Length: 236
Image 1: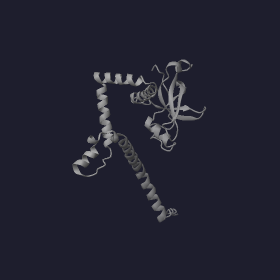
Image 2: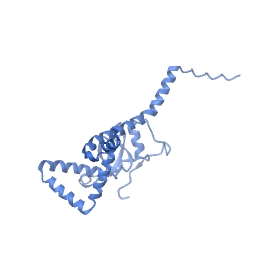
Image 3: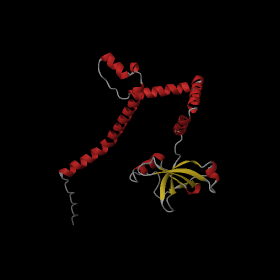
Image 4: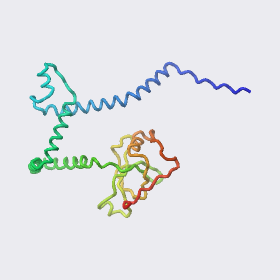
């Protein structure tokens, strides 16, 4: 008895083929195009703020026009100028004279009532963001939220300290639970250490999973039945 011949798949029409090619090309082009557009827009925004502050005699665009007679709008000059200026200020601030000048300028600013409040708040925000820029989330984890039996991905920040730890009976850790698809917003939670399940996936893979709303999973390094690991004690 002869085996039945497999049926040939129906041929795709011209429109379906064109549509498939278009969507494939869009998937390739969209991330590149959006990235280039964001960089181009951000560069232009910085240039629009920095270039008007450069004296006319030192503005690169004006100097090039005077030397060559050609109107040239070089995008990114403001960004380069800002980076060089910031590095020079940072280098000066590390020296004795620079620190003395900064302290004198701060004392002058802090003597003005309204500006004092604005400057102090902005300085605190800048120091918190920039000086702690090297501190990243330690690990990705699972916590039961918003109720038992429902699990959410979060990121372990640090061990709870001070009054937060003193007012709780359990040993708690601070975690940040981002929202989907925007991981920059979320909730700060203080969870008992024993209720935190550490994941083997990296923080980057966990962020991709959150941003994609569960569509992009990292490659499994362990069998699917491998249990999650509890967070070790702070003393370990």
